[in-house]
Length: 311
Image (cartoon, rainbow, N blue to C red; front, side):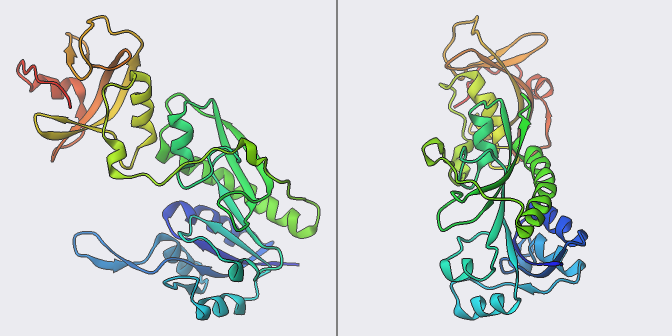
């Protein structure tokens, strides 16, 4: 029997599992719920979210309520008669009236090894912490944040050069396949959910622009992880001569052989580095304000002996 699925998601990453469900004959995506069109770009004209664009391309009906607290939106969702729901970065916590609609409940793809890194930024959390592995979890939603019972998990080594944007994309591709298999088995009664161990939970929060400001008192290794964890947003940046400078790529070195204060620029014939609170950070690629990305050595050649330091 075909499983009727309602899909809730909004950003580009959420298109990946939607496409997998739409292409799988075991499922019928009876509707998509996504956020309203928002102003975007220099024109400020409303643009549909990526999930809406994908749904329209697949011929799937779309709902865009301002909030699922609206009784009319809840009624419209119930009218789709879904057997199950799938949520992937929708952008709103589901209340009990919505959670009660599908008999099988809602499944969610979360790009971490729950209960580690609950919350909105799990990939950044894993990179910042220097975790050796990450992964994807498919769980059944409950009323709390990312605390529902687990249906499936897949572990993945966390590469030393992993960047949040590319890693998130890779994990959602893995998660899309994991979701389809888990949902089919769960609907057939051959897969049971296993409760999370709340005592092992760690949490993340929404990122802010200010999180990208580099504190040179931190160890070089932590700043290097920050550069990768905050790519593409908010980015890791510092201030040079009163102007922002984004650090795109860097390499941490454990020792500060020059014994200078954090933030001081150190250049040799072959490298350009910054002293930190623990070791030095060799700059590989940077982007000055209003300019293109460039090799750090190219940027340094234009400094003309300037001895100012980062702040």
